Structure formats: structure tokens, C-alpha cells
Length: 252
Image 1: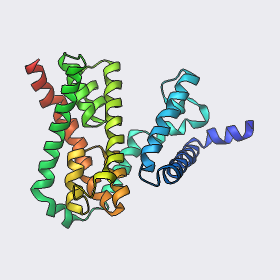
Image 2: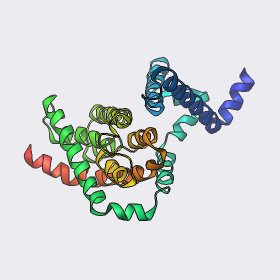
Image 3: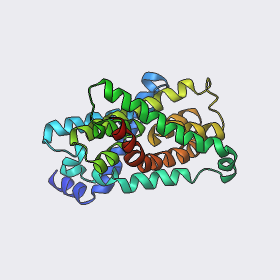
């Protein structure tokens, strides 16, 4: 066992790929067996990941989830921003330029509407839950944009670690809701072509939620939704810590 442990630690990134692969396999197995595919495997995988991170925190008293275990330190690298952004960009490369041009003004307008609407709803909920200082309201509103925009905004404007953590949690809830509800409402909202996928990605914004939700509807739509969802995150990181924070600071 000691030799096996040394091998796994020495090849921690490969170990991380195997660990994540097994987790995803279990998630999709549960999705097919228990929900007949209606509850997407990606959503179950995220829930399993959060549960394992929670158990790891209780076991090790650490702050890095399963990466606090020596054997699974590679998960910290695999889940880092570099590989995450690489995966997002690689997914977006599957989109056809002609279809992107066809979305035109609708695609661009959906980005603005999506960021402003998500931020506004998040800010209102933050106020209702007793947060009245501009920094906390802006950070929690940013979390409802995506779980990436939340910590980026919080770090930029000086939010407390507790508020930043809460903004991430808000973003994760949104991501899970998008990926689970999308297959259910796809037919009702006409989500069956590249143009609607582009607009959908621009309004919802959460990249993981949009990608997983569209994958359950039609895998060919994923690149289009991922493209605008990527711009959505970038736009949120740009205007929320600046324009939105100035607006909230003026109002409160």
C-alpha cells in the first residue's frame, strides 16, 4: 500500500483525472438508473463533488476539499483556473462563425440583459436577507451572475471572506438550477437551434450550467451556448466591480 500511495502521489495529476473520471461515471450511472436521464449527470457530479469536499474538510480540517489528501493533491491543479478556462475556450471552438453572426444583435443584447438581470435579482435578495452595505450587496449580486464573478468582484472591492464564500455558493446554486431545469423547459422556450442557444447562454451565463443543460437537450448546441456564456462571465468581471459597484454605492 505504501508503494501504491507513493506512485499515486508522484503522479498526482493522473490520479486526479482517474478520480474525477470515476466520480463522473458514478454520477451518470445514477442519473440513468434513478432519474432516467432527467436529472443530468453533470448536476449529480457537482453535488457529489461538493459533498466529498465537505467530508474532506471535516476529516482534515483543511480548506482545499479533497485536495487536502496527499493522494488527491492533483485535484487542486485539475480544478484550477488554468484548465477550467482552457476547457471553456476549447468548447467554444466548436461553434460555427456563420451561426454566431446570425445571432447578431440578439446575442449581444442577451449578454447585457443577462448580467444586469442576474445582478439585480441577487442584490435584491441580499438586501432582503439583511445586507445593507454596498460591498456585500455588490458581491452577492455578483455571485448570482456566476460563481466566478462573485469572488472576483469581492476581492476587487474588499469584501469579507464570509461574503465571498456566500457569493460562490449562490453561483453554484444557480449553476445547478440551470443545468437541471434546462432540459425540462427546452421545448417550451424553443431551445432547439444555434441562435436560441446563443441567446440562452447570454441570458443564463453560468458556463457549466449552460453547457450541461444544453448537452442534455442536444450536444450540438453546447458550443453556441458556451460561447456567449464565456463572454457573459468576462462582461460580468468587467462591469460588476466597476459600474455596478458605483451604482450600488450611490444608492446605499
